[in-house]
Image (cartoon, rainbow, N blue to C red):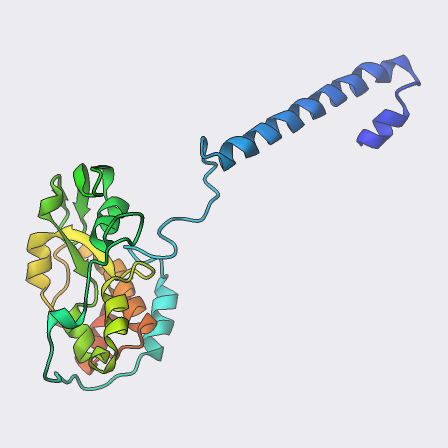
Length: 240
């Protein structure tokens, strides 16, 4: 349309105002577009079309029910063993310098909290955290536990006993999947190293996200599930 209007600009006078208006509007739109792009790139504004920060990791899982069911079908089902020699120290965790000068724990506290303020050592000094396992609202970072969705000992029983220390360290500090959740200390201690056949969060609203996350982590790390665990996961997915 702009080419046609331009070619007719010297003809009937009735078309001149329309052509001139169109040209002015086009210029304004172009200027605004350039300004918006510049402001977005500089971080001044957010148009909301950038990738979700939790899409590549973090709690809760963004895996759909269909995806969770597909991943569950791909997991190896084996009777659970408890190989001797487990020690939490075999899973070095809370790596330093994961993000700037932050540990993996501090990264999760910043990621999962609201209005989080940190000091020069990256430690939160204020903020709010929603303990999604039990709907408890936490206002002190000291009251927040970072739960390994698949507990370290559960990982050991499911195949991690055969890994290298480096692999176990990556598992314990995994920020790319939904392995790490900020939760209340009471719910984390209640869970312990249980799988979904023995423990589920008190809040039923989180059950679908919980099992989807559990399946995602086990699928990502190629860990096994035992028959009771698999049955519990299937039963929850059927209600989602």
